[in-house]
Length: 131
Image (cartoon, rainbow, N blue to C red; front, top):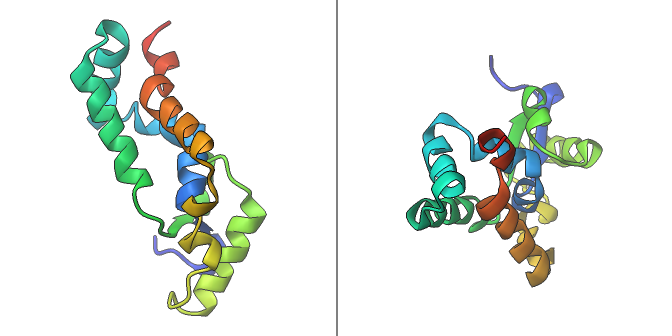
């Protein structure tokens, strides 16, 4: 089903990397579960390094993420703000990206970024692997 204005939400890279829901889901997807299991069950350094690479993939570039309302449950976000930015983006036919989405990483303090990275790499998905 194509995305329409009513179901569109725009989230920022900072929104994505701040979301524990996103990281818990990402690190337990079929493609990443092997690394998550090796990281937690045997302390595999290579698996931990790969989890770090996954974090870097999603945190390296400030860009808007357009998602549908069906995917809101995957993120810890301000839905009203995400809807407002999506409406702005939609009205410009995708030509104008809200400044918040272009510069979201610059508002993160180094300590916050490191804490988010620590969660994504060292903690995310643990509850599904270790009972």
